[in-house]
Length: 307
Image (tube, rainbow, N blue to C red; front, side, top):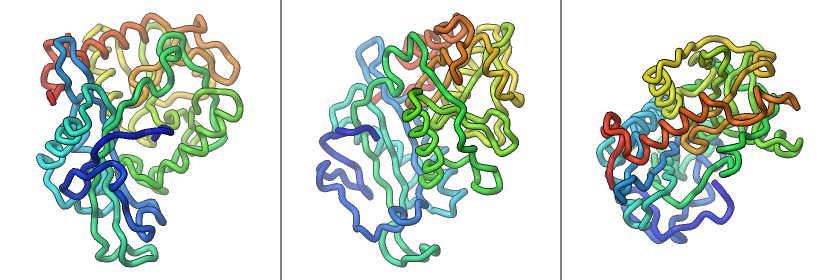
């Protein structure tokens, strides 16, 4: 989370508590070993002045699937978690915001077997702007291919949003920032393009959109959204392996994610991408995406849950 994040209330194990009172014991198992799962969700102010959560049910479904992958049983129903997210937004008086449900293993036994330690759930909501900056949304960002590889599917299952997995992302992100870039692009263990440190990746080449298949990458909800919007605009989308040098000769590259939304890349490894600025396909998909989350696309009303 960003520095300076604050709010009024946090939902913790079924109750709303004051922001500064949402505390856990130092022996919380997840703190030591990283076994926990989470989601990132956004709420948007819609064109009619209301507030809506984007694809709430899909995010909560993935939270439960992540927990199941990691042998964690969430002690609340999906419906209860959806209600908790909306309740937390209301308690923090947020029309727009970022929502972080976190499932973690509480204190009790130590060591690699959490045994009967309680499985706990928190929901945090706070105001957050553009993850990669307002300028980056229009001009595009600079990225580098990371020296860190994305997890192999049998080293760590990649379909869950597991807390400890993101150490890999932190190392890649820090390396990129220290080298003067905005973001890291990670290759898989075969040397093929996987994703960025926290976003799915798309390449535009000769009027076609390419994206890595769901092998070593997270099944992103924004990814699926943008793919559907592209097809509806008549832009073919192909899931296939992408090599590093294909990034260098791409017409456009963009990232998708709940935090990043739809963010163009203008440069990779000191090589300009296309015209060196946001391309027309990226711009069209940005506009389509923001029409959806603002409630201006009536066909996508079922993707919005109003607060």
